[in-house]
Image (cartoon, rainbow, N blue to C red):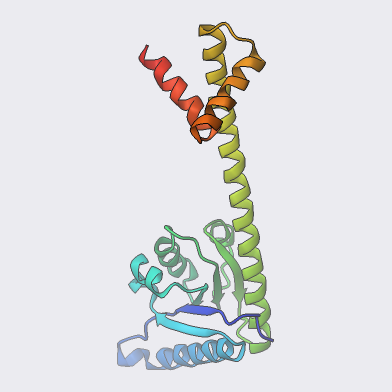
Length: 209
């Protein structure tokens, strides 16, 4: 299964252990990483880089500009996610976590931080495509909701400013509510400004007088 247009993926994976005693663990991690990356490629993805979580500055992420970040955390998923979330705080990106860490006590925190997919013991190629597709759809949905919320908040703030400016005009020029609003609209049209901008100017002048 492919996930539509080729996704540019940044893979965040643990460093290989340095000590000789940890060689079996290093081999296991390397095999896990090969399996994950192979599955991503089989699903039509492009891997732009493979980086350790503790060497993931936000500037590097911005430079790579991936469509999605895949976190491969065999264990200690929370620590890996903290680095990724910090690196993407200036620009949110969809994040999918693949882990063998069965501790799900921090799943809620992960989702709140922007993780769109949280998969435990699920590196099968046939499963990864579906996980990425769902993660991208969920991320786009959340982004749309964020924009709608921001637009609603902006509209509410604009209404507050316009209402205050109407009140100033009504009080100082003895206008009715409809007439005060009409005067605001006319001023905005004549000057090619937004209604909120004209209202704010009236408030600024009122504060100085």
